[in-house]
Length: 463
Image (cartoon, rainbow, N blue to C red):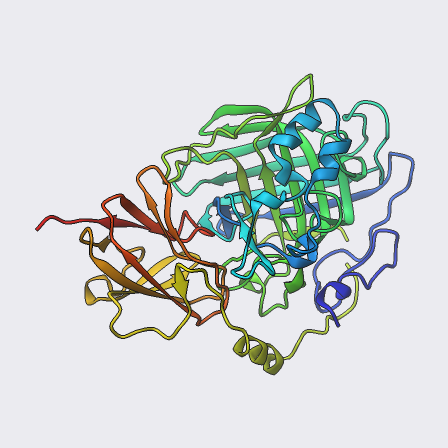
């Protein structure tokens, strides 16, 4: 059985159904009347002390199911840009990734037969840091459809929200939703601004396809305030909450693609089967409509600039309100292992895949949470160790993929210009050899998919 098929089985109501042994602790069915008064209340809570993750910028692995191939590309976002009008069209021309992925934003493998990762960093990365937080959110779904004409705020749907968290530096955040809204902000179906028992993202046409197609127990779109250390830093910013099936993978917190879903309990982060996200993109809502506006976080990235968005995950919440019933048919371990063993990594001219060479100048291990120093002895056991080089000297560096996440090796200059970049490989245990001549312009090495957590210095010590 295809993994995507499982989540489409259910269906005891018009809103679908999930559960059985796979989703044991969540609602059985979603029912609502069409009177705008009665409907579904879905409450999501997570107490302090449980796992919360702050997502960092990074590249996004590209799903063939969602985006096609270089020969047959799909979901470019062009349709949404063409049909939008006014400020919505202006915004989507600047932030097309909200609705699709333009061809010039996609990297390909060496023979250009498949897409690999995005060319840009976004909020939909595999990189995250564990932070503190708590959540109490109630979705109040009163109308299951959008009104084609009228004000985006003319909806009986509503939310109650108490969302608090820190960033990796310890700054305190609180979010407020002042008003739920529906199209044309955002330019897709929202079920009145709050939906329950629905499908979002991926191939659904609702939400950015950079997130995988996923079942949502509840979701909402609204405008609200971002409060940092007691100060309102953004007003009328777009705020999107959703409580969905687990889409983060065990071990490395990688964001799954459609082909990998649903995740089994062994594959899912912390073994949990659902979690709640909030995404506050760099968009505010004005009298004219949506306009670009970065989120004014207090968290500084390695570039020296503040992170311009919020993407926070409550990974151990509980859901009160509604579930249902089919068991997934996952591949057995033998099949999965065999598939992994027969997969090989590909490379660009900058690197070749081979066994770890004993005579390499540097050997590193690549994980989402950082590079691991292996040799020489001076860097053994260090995370993101400094590589000491001499200008004009030729070096051989070998790195091994330790977690099966999509990684590559790149060297950048002081201003962030790319001086060397290898192909992305995603096979656990695969190795890549990189040969290069040291230049004084080299400042850092990094993984371009996870440039925040997998980043180390290059130094040229005198003498």
